[in-house]
Length: 231
Image (cartoon, rainbow, N blue to C red):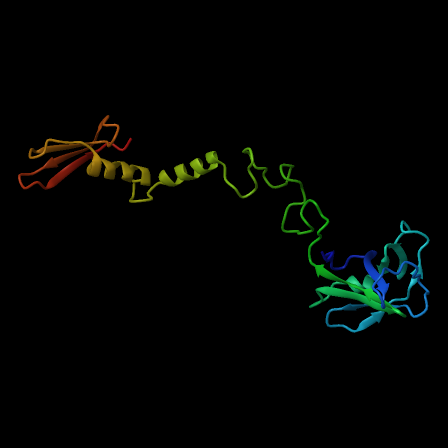
């Protein structure tokens, strides 16, 4: 997997591999001044830049421009110049390669990104709060078992549904969606009494606990007045 580096990062090292050109076996004895060594880097859309190789006392030595040392099994640490990773328009990657007489250098490609892949809080993105989830100023922590940010809990879903059902004037002025459904259910599925008389009563569906609609009806069956119970 290619390693991503944030644009503008400094003191960065990459790993390259060197193998024998004849049989492909790892070359383990290459040093900074081996005959014929010529390493380079190239930023996208730019010219190739030669690396001035330098020795490192140990693999734990601090970054040194051009620092070069064998890690093991033909893998080598190479400290690349800061200029290779500088931010720039249209520069989204750096290729590292080179040659050594009688050998093959297997280089590396480094994608340059605008975020910090090693920032465990917000990946260097200033649009996000620089605080861990749940901390002061941070994103709100999920509250349910197994919840993840962006996934609603059952309680949250119920709260959203309730807010929609009871939204004022959502159907008509003075009538919420919940109230409208109550009236519709009574008219369509509730018990009816008083049919053919001057007063028709439609009860709330299923529960059958109250008169939801009480209609005054004329001799032609037209409703001339209606009393509602919306509770």
